[in-house]
Image 1: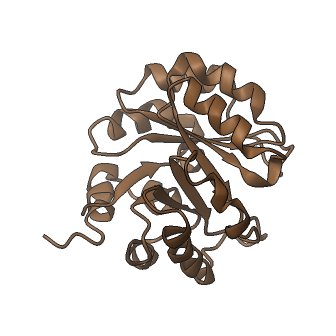
Image 2: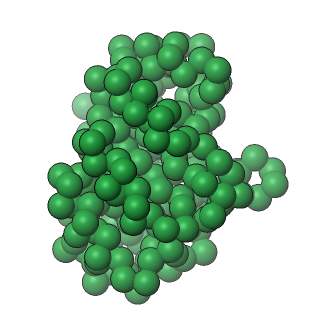
Length: 216
């Protein structure tokens, strides 16, 4: 089975997003991935509504959103006109996760739960019937470029056991070598940043990552 790739625009050159999207429009990918960060949950600021709206108009690919914000609820209504394919929310920001999962599904998007490295999965397994996707963060802000943490490969494997029949995503510092290990652990969706955008030929690079774990 081919791996589904989701290029993360936050890692692309922000001065050349139009050119980047032109290249990615020629690639076979699962979505254009947009991290929404407003400094309330992670110490960074990425995209506002004006930018993501323009991105939506510049690509034929579906959009996936990763809401790294302290209060994700307003964003669901704000993003609704863009018809997101996926919206991920962090369990660390939610007192009652079921409420926002229902809200996300109500606008026609797949509802995803995202987990920081230190957050255990088991307490949230009761949400398996509500969530469509699960994202395991494989890095965190560390002052050293958000390096991939190999110990989190086991967490991906645990996710496949606790959340059966749900898409398992991995996001954070992924390289080709770690992509193979993540696929073996059960991650079929990979969010790629620097490993993709540090190359000149995005289409060829996407194809290389897509073939991770392919047994044909």
